Image (cartoon, rainbow, N blue to C red; front, top):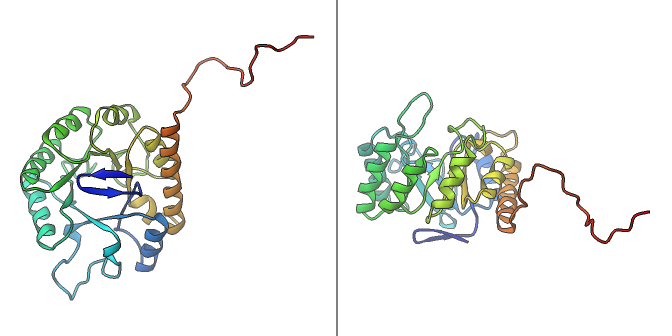
Length: 255
């Protein structure tokens, strides 16, 4: 079990709800993942107009914590406004703060993200900022009072895995709040790697929704995350540069 603010979870897989081809495929992936958290872009949903039902309309949301995000925002002001819309629509007050600073790489804007977090914390939100692998920014945001840090593994949608494991490990080792790896994970191997580094959870979307078999990939990701967490807790052997005999050499008789 891990906590984000006042929320407690057993599953360490947080699932995005965009890009699924059909509602049936989405439902299959949600069930296979055993997630407890569904995240979605507020700007892509019609929260008030019944003529345009949202993509989660047929999902029993009472079984999940809904985790709105501010995707599409390019300034702190926009991110704050999107969070307020989600709040007024009676969605969860836990918000993923995402402010894009570059439209080609879709990398987050550190300055605008920090300012948005500052205001949303003052308003009483449970704040989870999406950031690059910036060790100093992660530290400053934690000092500000955010409830979780969400560093990317690599640029969103690329499936490249963890581009900078060293910085990610620095963030994890220094953080006193949950670290949720978000964006760039392409396979269960990547998810397992992040968890072995000590991440608390993984947020996934494209790697599952765009797989040939999203349901099967959701289950594979779930197992990869579980294996990585167990490996982290077990403690891997140190990396060595010379061969080490796997059997004891003491007490062996020689002919």
